Length: 452
Image (cartoon, rainbow, N blue to C red; front, side, top):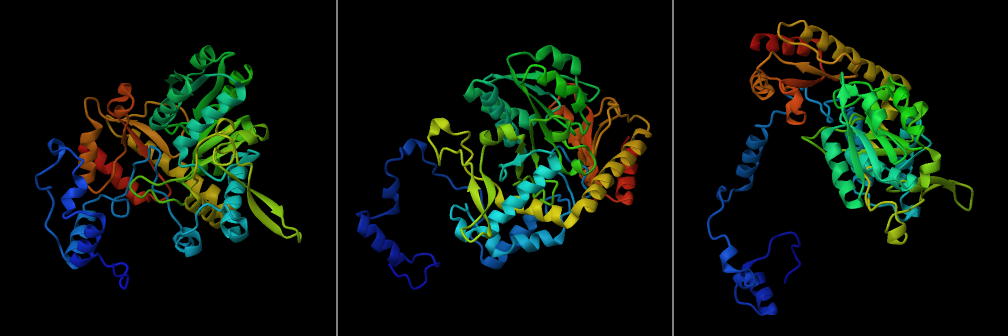
């Protein structure tokens, strides 16, 4: 076979030579072990072959059908938000030394990537008020499930109490993880948009490894962590808090309120929503739990000449130690997206992050106030919220129908809570970020009023 043009598909002559070498006379012979009864003999419903210009035009036309947040003001959150992404982030990420970097097993040639991860860890510790953070997780949901695993291992208990105000998809992943490890998941109901403290206290006992709450929770409401913390610590269990990192520009760090593990998704920190991912999870713990953390940690040290350097440390994964001693089988981190978050935090700084958080808080309050003034609309929960809130639509209406009409009017509407909470049919979860202008908000509210 000719290697003169490596990246040009093979010719018919190349194909003939390869088939002769392996002793077949047709491509069909490669599939002879597949029974005829399961083979598809029809024609796939797709277009005929296109030349490159035609194909590009076709793909652009298909992409143009997407209602993206660049053209449609988005009021959809539910875990993935339309935040401002500073232009410098894509500039840094497009540098080849970052986007081509893989696992930094050889620290002598990976100092740049290792330093970037170390700074991500440092930022997460400062935001969350925790002692140690790892080099990132796949996303916030898997980080939450791993927190439950850590809690069970640290306490030698099997029961996990999780609030129903935690993201429904994160709870699904938690249940899937728990099934394999024999963990007992108990869900605690909510009242007025936050965890029902009475029901939580009744469920927590000597067999409870951890209480898992989210604040701001899935409804956007702020949980009373100071009231939850003593309920689990009285039984020597652990408090796991999932949080929106942007909200920590305004709110007290969970670590300062008694959290033992703080997890979340770094997507609000300069990571594009990109039609659903990828994102980047973070995982931070109090110092006694440091050696039980999943994933990897980058540590700072000095070389033999006394110069600062960075290395992977405390590597308690099954790739490094005996499988039965491993803390987790998480094998990769999201280094490139962790870099996104680091660049965002360094660009925003100690003044910019609180300002962005404050804009989210103010704009969400403005939107909720004028929406609740419309006839037929109301706010069902009285708990304080960050940048997301629950809106009850006029009785007898479906959120899906409202969202179709909003899309026709040029808006991406909120999340249909009835799809995850049967008791909240006709309730929309509305997210308002710093990107939404007053004009966009007013037009969105005006359109809802017209539809009503």
